[in-house]
Structures are given as structure tokens and as C-alpha cells.
Amino acid sequence: MAKKDQTTDAAKEKDREKWMARFQVRLAMQPGVDRTVVLQAVKEVTTHCAETGEHPRSAFGDPDAYAVQTAARLVPSDRAARAGRHNSVVDALDSVRDAAGKIAGL
Image (cartoon, rainbow, N blue to C red):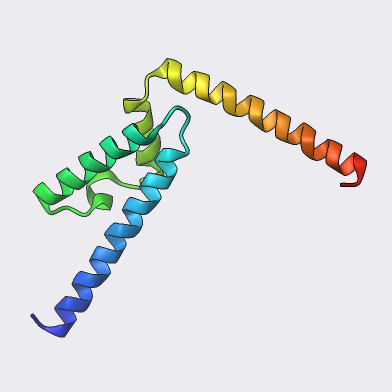
């Protein structure tokens, strides 16, 4: 294999890895997503790309948008809603803690 081909292949592989890493992070941030959901989604993407030879961006588009779509498809709506409410409560408590710390001069 020519050196240029090796460089091109390495660049393509690095781009695939970046896409997959971003997808995983964004998916994990979605309400109600747990390890099982992430593993299932990664397996689906990896299998599809291995079978078709497509780059994940060509097959699935933007990793952020696909993470949102995947979470909506794989996470039951009641679990996502419950996780969203939990996150809202935690965010509110963090805000109160931060404000109290500023008032106390901490």
C-alpha cells in the first residue's frame, strides 16, 4: 500500500473515532440514557458501518442530532421524563448551593 493511502486511511479512521466518541458522549448526556442504551446504540452503528463500509457521518449524519434521535428511540418516554425532572431538581439545588456559598463568602 502506498504511503498516501495509509495516511488517508489513518485520517478516515481517526475521523470515524471522533464521530463515535462525540456520539457516545452526547448520547450519554440525554435524559434516561444508561450504559445499556449506549452499548446498544454503539453496536448498531458499528455493525451498520462494518456491513456497509459507510462512514457513520454518511450513514447517520451529525453525531449530536443522531444521539438525540437514538435516545428518543431507545429510551422509554416515561423514563426520559423522570430523568429530566430529576436533572431539573438537581440543577435547582446546585443553584441554591452556589447562591448560598456566595452569600456566605465561601
